[in-house]
Image (cartoon, rainbow, N blue to C red):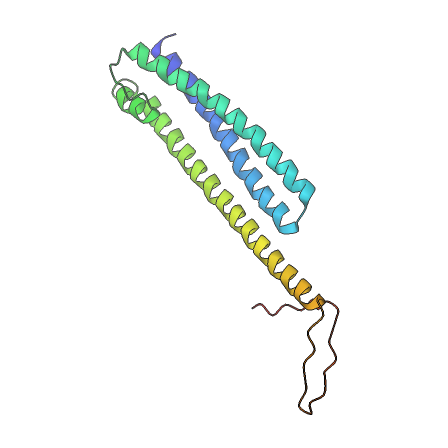
Length: 172
């Protein structure tokens, strides 16, 4: 394959990767909706879909890395740092239009990856906060359902103990 054909192959691979990363961001958003509605089945479905998409992205990224290596070989470059960024610098003078396209795709991928990381972190924080609330509710319910010890009132009479759970939280 000639150099231009290899670069166009890389552009097509990056377009596919961008599409998969957009799908991943959509899945993470849908996962958040499932978390908010506490739909366990939907959460599991979204998690499995994310896992499948991650494996697909890893496979595509492996192909992308192979293509980048082929381009460096075709360029007869002695560069040890075989990355997309370095490739863009190497081909800038030869194929400036494709170089700009690659730079744009790389920036889009970086943005999508950061967005996915941010959304995943928000989901993680939401789950952690939900667990804290559930634990606090559990303590409130269990703490109030245990019989209270008998205490004495103002007239030295034993107050009756109160049993039964109260579902009122004193949290703010």
